Image (cartoon, rainbow, N blue to C red; front, side, top):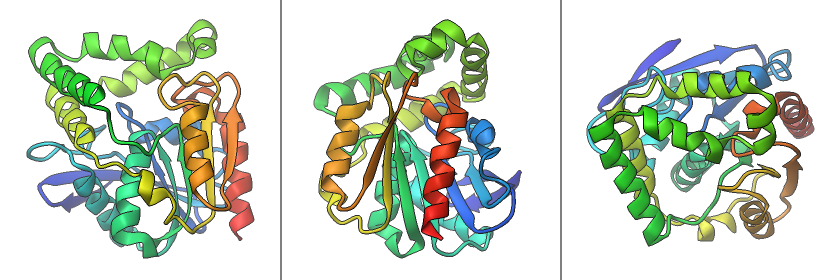
Length: 264
């Protein structure tokens, strides 16, 4: 793992493959290992930049909430350190939220984007309150009850019923986060701005991707993004929930490879 200092945190990232660089941003509460199954379809042609987002995996969380502004600055510093100029982004869930902030701040560094299992609106008041309550709960009770409660929301029904190895692997990634990590990342997501108006400003090649079993950011959220980003494509991954690249890596790897190859 490569290590950099970004503001008040040490941020780690992995490099895989060689060729034009591509940034892959994992979801909460996972880490860069989320991308290892998909990477097999990409490493022969591309240099993959796989960060552990602030507060995830081996990256520190810093002081206070892990705001989208902090995440965006982290990614900019990673690109500098990896000597990557203008690059395609792939962002899953919180990775998409970070992309929107990065676009507002550093759009000249973005060549294309895949918005995967994510959404543009800010949290509703109820959603924000739920995140803040979850943050308090993990600090009081530890992370295990929270992670167990997240599995049916993050992984599709098909995955939970047929792939216990993927369930265990997802829990293994989650367990690398401390209660403080989870709390500050949740607080940061609760504070994220609404990005619906940002959608119409996106003028790079865009693919919107979701899983047909994603109960958090499924086809309706994908269609909102697709309809507001001129010229975007949209694809729905069968038998996949909110972690669709983890759940269906061969399908998603093929889709990503075709999209990235089309940019050349």
